[in-house]
Each structure stands twice: as C-alpha cells, then as structure tokens.
Image (cartoon, rainbow, N blue to C red; front, side, top):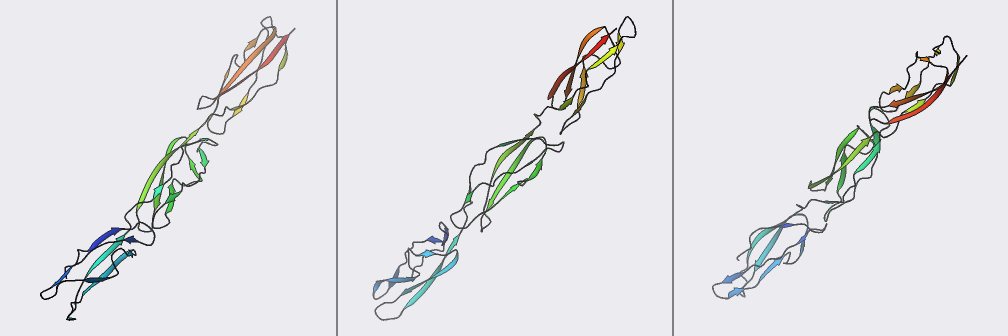
Length: 231
C-alpha cells in the first residue's frame, strides 16, 4: 500500500476539519487493488490527531494494511470588532474612572475570552492612555486591538466673589478696602487675579473689581464686585 503523507489541517468549524486523501495498492498478481480507509477521505476529523487505517485485500485474501495520521489544529486567531476612542472629563487630580464595553470577538472553533488593559472601570490619568484589547481562543491563539482613552479637564473653577462694599472715605484719596475671593477646582490648584489688589486705596465713587480664577488647564471663571467709597 502506498499511504499518503501525514496530513496537518487547520480547524474551520468547532467540530474540526474535512480532510481528503487517496491511497493506492498494487499486487504482483492482481495488479491494482482497491484500498479502503477508515475514516474515509472527505470525513470531518476532530481536533487532535486521528490515525487513518488503510486496508488492501487482493482476491486471494492476503490483505495488507498501512496507516497515516490526520492532525487537526486551531491556528487561526479570533477576530475582534473595532473599538471607538473615548474622551472623559477629569473628576480629580488622578484623572477619571472610565468604563467601556469589551468589543465582541468571534472564532470559528471556540469561544474567545476577551480582556482589556487597563481594564474597564480603571482610573485613567489626565492625557491619553492606550487600551489594549486581547482576544484568546481555547488553542491560545490571540489577536489584539487598541483604542485610546483621553481624559481632559475642561471644567472651569467655581468662583465665589466677595460681597459688594460701601466704605466711608478716610482721606481725600478715598478709602482702603480689603477683600478675598475664593475658588475651587476638582482637578488642580487655582490662581486668582484681581483688577485691583486687596488693600488698595479706592477713590470716591464706585469701582468695579474684576476677579479671574484659572486652573492648571487654563480653564477660567470670572466675575466682578463693586466698592463704593463715599464721604
């Protein structure tokens, strides 16, 4: 019997792969002799290695046999659906907690396991972070894809202005006024800028004092209050 070489096939459905082959046999007396195979050519072979038995029986019943193997393996990585990039607003100096669904993954042979790093629900720092998604099938074939999570601070500080003041002039130049605005920000420290500094001398009449609060991301909030100096 002339047996085919061992066959290695890639699994396509979950139940394995179809393999086709042919074997021949000759007899000194009978010439060409039919060969039977078990499993037969065209059968679906399960994942793993299967031995195919070959038998040739001439008319005189002096049968001969041979064998070869069909090895079916899963060498194809899963397919992963694309993920969209995400943008989130920072909620603290640490960044923001970002959640996202894992993309779907498909495989012809087994159900892939899908993971992401950093994982959904992690705290992502200010700036851009690349998330790597990995799909792994039962044969440890893997495919990866990536998307970007960008955390930004676009929220202006919360500014609290001083109350308006009415002061009595203490000289011809007017009166000295002291005041302080406050500002808070969830992400970064805030600097305050005044159009007139606290402790300045304000002339007779009404002066509007502008206040600007700026955070580290250059988000600003502004407002004004008045100081009335009278005699």
